[in-house]
Figure (tube, rainbow, N blue to C red):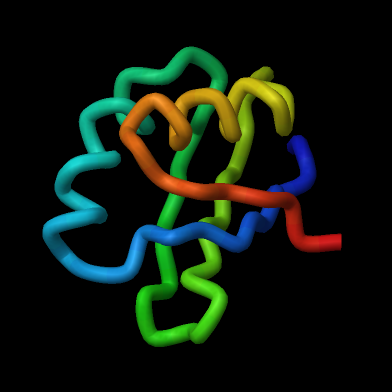
Length: 71
């Protein structure tokens, strides 16, 4: 199984999650994902199934949100 990826994002509310949901759900190579809106960094956790870090970031940027990898 591929290692999960974590990102800091600007996805900060349920409405934002709803906006990004169809893009992440339909993205090739993403098995599952979640956003911790209670975390100050709004951590997006992605379980990839072939998607690269860059592809995940591009998908979230398309929805209009900021995203950066958590190192």
